[in-house]
Length: 188
Image (cartoon, rainbow, N blue to C red; front, side, top):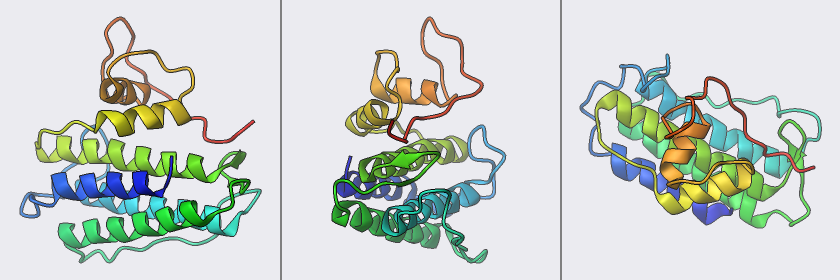
């Protein structure tokens, strides 16, 4: 995956959530304990953290910095922060040398960080839309690309449904709902 995938996922988040700034973003985001607002800020945080990892190339942990979104930021402003952080991750991924590795529970390549950024964005957009009562399904092609990169042992099926099942957010016919999960971003 690459920077354009990250930018596209963030654009999708803004497209689907941008029209609803007047809804109560203080409600829980789907099955999460976080509010919709906090979940959107979390997406921005992760995108920036991944950009820092790709740029700084630490080999043994996450860089010791954090994103603080002003608690007075409106939902629209938080979505703008998501867009900015997606741009930073996209730039970091697209300008990194192909052999670049940085820590994410092992050595991870730029494409892995892009995939994690897209996953965080799509999955949490789904959480927020569930909390706000907005109907939405992640794009099938982006879902499939995330599954291919982060979940090598995934079952077959419609990619949005499989992605939700892989991350404990949905049902998949013939399979028990997942209660724990992890993705494989690090390369062996």
